[in-house]
Structures are given as structure tokens and as C-alpha cells.
Length: 544
Ligand code: FAD
Ligand code: NAP
Image (cartoon, rainbow, N blue to C red):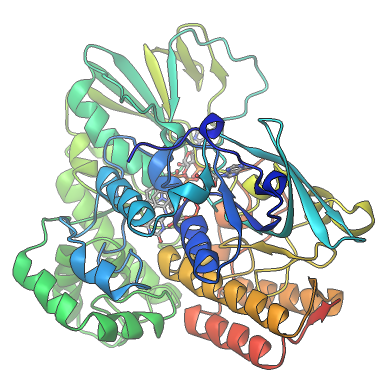
């Protein structure tokens, strides 16, 4: 079914005398599931989505090589047994087109499109204390009145470009991985520069190298890339998973990261040199994120961490032929403090004669000249530049909406020293507003589809409870919020992810508060906390 354009439907159900119960911003995994739940409850909900179709991340990030790094049979919805039994994933890690097709299928199968307005951006949202309703405005000039305002805007949906003091003079083509053109890009015969070697850069670099006349990779920080070891799924393995899908899902939800793979819990320090090598080799063959679970203490013990780094270096040096390039590709941070990228032929790409690695450590990019990029005093002439430079993560898409709560409070001001909320879902001073998969929840440290379903269920149950008990509005108490923020901070300080400069701590955005934003206590503890709060009649919340 083709997407419905905003001018084809009446976006303001309120104008048909049917007041909106909820406006949901975003039609990614979170927004789609939220809409489905509210539809099931018979509520009048509408999704507003900036893109022309569903998919969120998987609509925008259609760069060559984009794929998930959590196995598709787990990185998918589990709310419908029929859906998970009938959908057939083709690859261990599905690529972007396959995930987008799946999300389009979900939208059609559960008849969600009729409640989605595409190609429309929410610009402002203002709470009215007298009516306990939100007034939501869009860039198409509509004004919607709604009881609940639900942000499913994405944790990695506001793209970032490199900041330089100088003007941007480049006259060639410029692309960002997170806003890839629908029609694709042909780099044949072009001199291309890629800036960034995080997860997106690692996926796109080998693909551009196959097409471009020359590819220059501008690297500021090297990463511990591990081969994804992606492969087609065979029907036997799929049937086996499907025959015990419920059990697999339950085990996954009991894991801190909400997904499972072959994990070892013994210490790297207790193993002999030979046992260690054998285990590292085994886990390298499994590839991707599971490599970090070769032993139980690689991310918690400095000595164990040094051992995995040593093995990783030996592997990388086996692949990369040029010693200077191999040196540049060797990270100096501890293993695991940044998200570990999964790659396919990533290091092999640097052996190609048409690829060069440009070290921009420390300085970053100095200037975008008319002809290319100036870095460390040298100008690199280019026809096209690909920004794989990441996102204003977790808070970026929330604060870009002008949100006004009680007494004129602005979310952007409230969060200027770091995001504050209660159980990652509600913000004091902003009643009847829920934020999905943002700061203060395990979201980005776990399988996000599972996280979306959990939060969607919690919000839907909360609304149902409010209706049963005749409550008009819900607001997080400031004391409860302050205690939650402290807990998130204290747990974060124990996580290896908080120890180096990355988007997890807001370090990639100039001027952003340096705060570790996700809840690092693990998915099951988070779920238990949310359940407990609900059971105690939503302890920590006030109602009117
Ligand atoms: P999104 O999918 O980001 O959807 C949010 C939507 O909100 C967007 O479509 C956006 O256009 C819309 N929006 C935002 N602001 C507005 C506004 N003001 N008005 C209207 N619309 C708005 N996670 C994993 O768990 N496993 C993975 O393997 C994985 N791989 C990833 C690969 C890439 C390339 C990226 C970028 C992220 C990946 N992630 C992965 C994280 C991924 O973002 C989440 O898994 C998940 O897709 C997020 O879903 P969401 O619905 O919360 O947000
Ligand atoms: P990212 O991890 O933030 O990486 C951005 C890259 O750009 C980094 O290498 C960064 O260098 C570099 N950079 C930024 N500004 C620069 C500048 N001015 N000069 C030079 N280099 C600059 O962003 P991402 O790669 O898009 O990934 C973001 C997140 O999306 C991931 O962590 C992951 O959660 C998700 N993702 C997942 C997958 C997957 O495999 N499933 C794929 C893509 C994305 P520094 O490190 O020095 O800052």
C-alpha cells in the first residue's frame, strides 16, 4: 500500500468532533507499537511522522550496508505470535531494506496507516493546565488538541554534521548516512570522502570502496570493529527457533540486554593462554556483539580487557597489510567503552589500492574547502563527502520540538544540564506526556524493539488504569524524578560505556551536558521497577 500523504487525509480528528486521545510523534518501532496498543483499546490516536513512510531509523538510514547487529529473530516484535511465526527473516542480521519491508508489513497487517500523517513534523506542543490537554502544532499548520502527548521520536534520529570554525565551502555532493536519499547514490567514477568510523561508517565504507575511483576515510578515533559474520538463515534453524519462540523471547527478556547469544561467564584470567586463544577464536567466528562475551569479565576487569585487546590487535594486523595503516586503525581507548561496531570486510577494505585512511585524530576536520577537505594542513580533493558523523542522541529530537509544560516550563531549558525524568518515561512539570526509548531507560543498551513493546504496554496500561479510576492527568513527582536521575547517574558511573567520549555521554555535541544518559541497571531490573510502580498505583506520580 502506498504511504498516505498529509494532504490526502484530515489530520485533525478533533475537527470532526472526535477529540484525540493521543498524539504520537514518530512511526518507528516505538510509535507503531504504541499506536497499535491504543487502537486496540479503542482510543483515538494519531501518529505524526516527518518521513513519507513508516520505519523511523530503517526509513532514513538506507545507506549501502545498513543492517542491524542484533539477530533479526530477536530484533523484531513479539506481541503477535502469528506475526513472528509467519514472517521469515532471510539474514541472520537483516539489512535495511528487509527491516523496512517488515515494518511496512506490520503497518499494513495491523491497519495502522489510517492513523498516521506522513511528511509532517511536530514543531510545538503546549500543555493547558485548565483543560489538562496538549495543543500540538505541525509544520503543515495543523493544530491538534490531545489528552496524551507521546514522544516516539527516536534516540538516533537527529543527524549531526561536523562543526568547524570555518565556513562550509564544499561545492560537491554531501550526504549523511542518517538521511540517505531514497533513490540511492552512484559513486562510480567519483573521489569520495567518508568522515566517521563509528557503526555507520564501518558499514558504508566497504560498499563505497567497491564503487568509487578513490575513497578517503577521515578517522578521528579508531574502533574495535569485529566481523559481523552475517549469513543467510537456513530454514531448519528458523523452524527450530520458531518452535520455541516464546521460550527464547522469555530468556532474552531475562538478560540485561534483552537479547541472548552464546555468552561465557568465566574469567579470562583463569584460562590458560591456549584456552583463551581457543575461546577468543571461537567467539570471533560467531562474530559481532557476542565477541564481547568470550569471557565474563572482558568489560569489567582491566587485565581481562587488555587480553581481549591483544587478541583483537593480532587479528586486525593479520588482515591489514600496511603497518602504518594498521597502527592508525588501532584504538587507544579500552575495549567496549564505545559501542563495538560490527563490520563486513571492514579492515580488508584498507588493503584496496583505491582506499586511503586519513588520520584526523585530535583536530577533526579543519575546513570544508570548495574542492574537498582540509585536514592536518593537507587538502584532499573530493567529488562527494559522506558524513557518517552520528546523531544528537537520546535528547536531540525531543528538544527540537518546542515543548511547554506547566507554568511555561520548556523541556529544552529543563534538560540543559542533562535529561531528567522518572523511570525514563515521564517528566515532572509535563503532565500527560510520555517519552519512549529516550534517556533514563535501558533503551539503547538493550534490544530496542523489546524495549518499545515494554514501554508501549506500560503506557497503555497506565492510560487504561487512569480511565478506570477516572483520573484526567498524570505527572511525575519532582522528588521521584530527582531520585531516579541519581540512580541512573550512579549506575551509569559503574558502566564501561560512561568512561570515554561518545554519544552515550553527549560528548559528540558541542555544548551538550556531559551526562551518561541511559539506565545501566539492565532490562529485567528496569521492567521490575516499572511493574512495581504500576502495582503501587503509580507510586511517584500525581494525578488530577
Ligand atoms: P526511530 O526509528 O528513530 O523513529 C523515530 C521517528 O520519529 C523518525 O522516523 C522521525 O522522522 C520521527 N520524528 C522525530 N521527530 C519528529 C517530529 N518532531 N515530528 C515528526 N516526526 C518526528 N538498535 C538495536 O537495538 N539493534 C540494532 O541492530 C540497531 N541498529 C541500528 C542501526 C542504525 C543505522 C541506527 C541509526 C540505529 C540502530 N539501532 C539499533 C537503534 C534504532 O534507532 C532503534 O533500534 C529503533 O529503530 C528506534 O525506534 P524508535 O521508534 O524509537 O525511533
Ligand atoms: P557515531 O557512533 O557517533 O560515530 C560518528 C563518527 O563520526 C565517529 O567516528 C566520530 O569520531 C566521527 N566524527 C564526528 N564528528 C567528526 C569530526 N568533526 N571530524 C572527524 N570525525 C568526526 O555515529 P554512528 O556511526 O552513526 O552510530 C551511532 C549509533 O547508531 C551506534 O552507536 C549504534 O547504536 C547505532 N548504529 C548501529 C548500527 C548497527 O550495526 N546495527 C549501525 C549504525 C548505527 P569520534 O569517535 O572521534 O567522535
